[in-house]
Length: 293
Image (cartoon, rainbow, N blue to C red; front, side):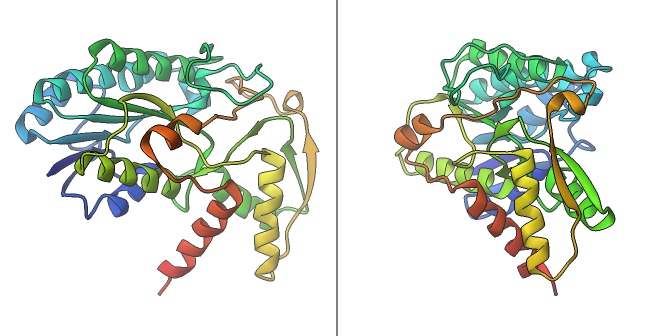
């Protein structure tokens, strides 16, 4: 089986290169070889490679920066997924695509289910919702996987930022009224590998839209506290953490206060196992220790 993985250096794509390695011939295309802002380049690559499965792990994910470059963001996050869906359908190949909790406004008091009405607060969320809709309009075999609060040991993310700031400063303010599930990119890749394996062996569930995050819930302040706890366990001094409301930390793009995703449907329909957020954090940190020489 030939798998086309779009995205090379992103958090999720790096983990997918490990988890999908044994599932078939893995062809990785980064921005240098496949620019998602160029529709004809997308079509040419897919038609030349003729993959059996397409996994799109590339996106414009700079949430605040997106507010000032909407045209580029929509080209990558909205138009490109629709083109990929068209080309995948023409090959009778499934498409796996990742979306976000930012399609919701965060006003719901309980975790969001797949059939809750989206209402994105910013350009990034609107572009990702448009990408979902473009794929759904094409139809064909596809999985749209909404996830939340992605982090890893690579790139730019909350975990790495907190590890640095906790050791550089004496005191640190962290938002405490946004609630969600921090999701390790490795957990997303592991779940994706399970989905691919089920499909390959004729055990696929219904195609469509699903939520995929780690289990449980925590605030950004709680997540930062868990990161600090692990640093202290290594004998490292950490800053004193202070909880603050979102209103005290203004950003160009508004964030949803509730980012919790109900993943029951994915677990039931595709029999995918999802770990809790704290266990995933420990697994992520331990994976970094294992990779050291």
